[in-house]
Image 1 (cartoon, rainbow, N blue to C red):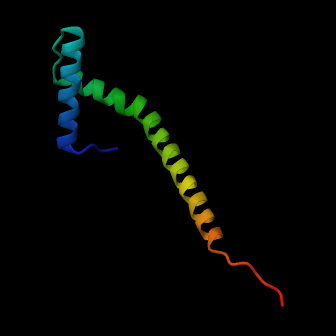
Image 2: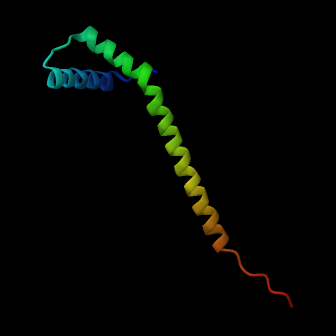
Length: 80
């Protein structure tokens, strides 16, 4: 997965800020790249899969609502 340059730079800045604020340590460009790579490769798939599951659940709910809406449009059949 390729990350757009601007977004990648923002994430790297946030990683550096977090490490500094939480641990009082400044990390360089190489360490920041390694952290970002770790997050992307090791953790990213879990967030992605959860996003897919959430989207699937939302679509299923919308389909149920559509089915209910369509059923409410049915007219009764009268026999003469």
